[in-house]
Length: 182
Image (cartoon, rainbow, N blue to C red; front, side):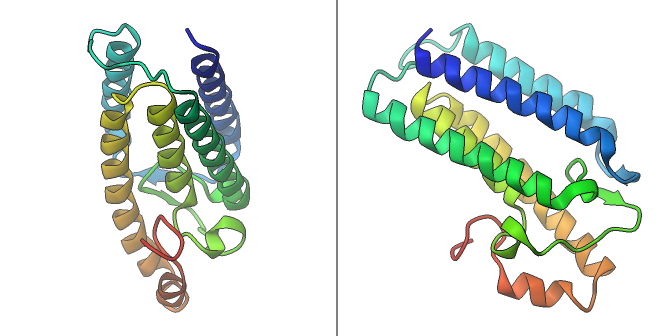
């Protein structure tokens, strides 16, 4: 295993430990797809196992130091954005498509430019992983991005219902996932 692989693996492990610890202090709520959480986690674990055991043989490893650097930088930036956004959303955070009791519309920090910066950060970190470790991670990036876009669309409908006066203006002044673009 290369040093970059190890750094990224340790980074993901630390990120998920933080994520689990931080999730202990959130507002009560319900999630629309909560009953499918086990299935989603299972699919992710199977894909990761296939990638890790190199059952998908071929052009799996990246051997270019420039790509390692670019990938590692994107990985770190993505995780930093997701953590920054998680800190700003505070107790309002929840699993994708969850509905919180007494929700608040957070529009500061990373939410000032991006409506879903946690999703953006995680996608960016996955892209960095793909560039630095294995191009097969692009499969995981595509699946994750599709899931997050569907989640974002559902969450935006809910937010428009909860904040009919403020959310349309906020939506017009920000982008969904990529500042100034998307």
